[in-house]
Image 1: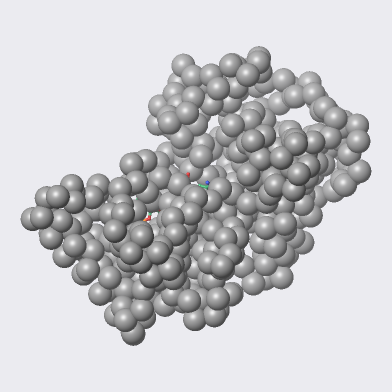
Image 2: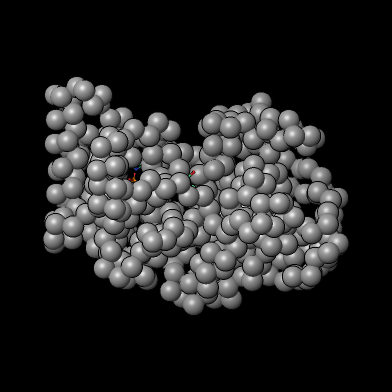
Amino acid sequence: MPPLGEVPARMHASVIRPERYGPPSQGFAMEVVDVPAVGRGQVLVYVMAAGINYNNVWASLGYPYDVVAGRRKKGEPEDFHIGGSEGSGIVWAVGDGVTSVRVGDEVTLSGCTWDETAEDIRLGADPMTSVTQKAWGYETNYGTFAQYALVKDFQCHPKPKNLSWEEAACFLLTGATAYRQLCGWPPHTVEPGDPVLIWGGAGGLGSMAIQITRIRGGIPVAVVSDDERGKHCLELGAEGFINRNDFDHWGRLPDTSDGAAMAKWMKGARAFGNRFWEILGERRAPRIVLEHSGQNTIPTSMYLCDTAGMVVICGGTSGYNGDLDLRFLWMRQKRLQGSHFANIRQCRQVIELAASGKLDPCLSWTGDFADTGRAHQLMYENRHPSGNMAVRVNAAAA
Ligand SMILES: NC(=O)c1ccc[n+]([C@@H]2O[C@H](COP(=O)([O-])OP(=O)(O)OC[C@H]3O[C@@H](n4cnc5c(N)ncnc54)[C@H](OP(=O)(O)O)[C@@H]3O)[C@@H](O)[C@H]2O)c1
């Protein structure tokens, strides 16, 4: 550890390069690179721990978006990608104009960036909807998978004192994304007594969504692929869980003119719905469905969602073709809402929940810095433990 505020010329980083694009075990490699210069409004953070998220599985695959080519097209010179969209650390240097943090502050970092002078933001837009908004550590370089990360000042939040470096690094991306999905789209915010269906309940988003739903008085019902994961969901407050392997109507919706195929699909979807009712103990549909699994599950989500309810989606792990039978959409006046990470206010609300001990960051796995690729490989293969994962970057093992 160099003396506080002394910035070295070079740093270790877990780097993705286009020539290695592929599964994370191949895509990530440890390298030594230059420490980036700190510009106006920017902060250089000495990274203690970094959270692991699905976006850098996509970065490693080079699919559906080639992050390095995308940036080079916009004039950025680097031919490599340092990902990592959340983390914890110590402010090491600040650029001109930064007044919100000082060298030595302990911070938790949030994962989106934008141009605060953009016209849409000046006209009052939520910065998450600005044309300048980018997923930091995915669409931008110099994320937390390096000894130093480069952020804008508004990405720095006070680190909750009750959390370790690893805990403080692992929950904000999934927590704030789930929070915006569940609380950011009025009038479809979770209210007391609202049933909520949560796909991937034991995953990063799911673990946060179950807890947030309970905190708001809603009734979370989780979907998982094995009973061990179901147990994790119950421990977090789920009313019950559905094992998706008990059903087989997944994948794209059949052509609606194919009566036999549609009847078979409806049978599967209805059986899934019956299981949901069984768990609730009454015949009520979910007012909100938290989606991210995408192609394989969205037809069921749209079918099961309550009349005038909302399916809110932030990802497409199983594919991007979102089939829906439009009759369910208009006759039942349902809402299909896209949602992406969270604005600063929503981030702070989630940090406050963790700082007050109401939200468990659900750190389930901690690795060394050199394990960054391995952690993403586990996630890619859906073999990772329930909850959120982190790697120690500069932090020492306890
Ligand atoms: N837009 C945003 O801001 C944002 C933010 C965070 C995450 N995301 C996206 O959301 C997705 C999930 O992220 P995460 O951090 O929660 O990942 P995660 O920890 O891997 O959890 C995802 C869960 O989804 C379930 N799943 C996987 N394949 C499935 C399928 N075919 N059908 C149903 N469920 C399936 C798995 O649970 P079971 O196998 O137990 O069912 C897994 O635990 C990723 O695609 C990620 O890129 C987007």
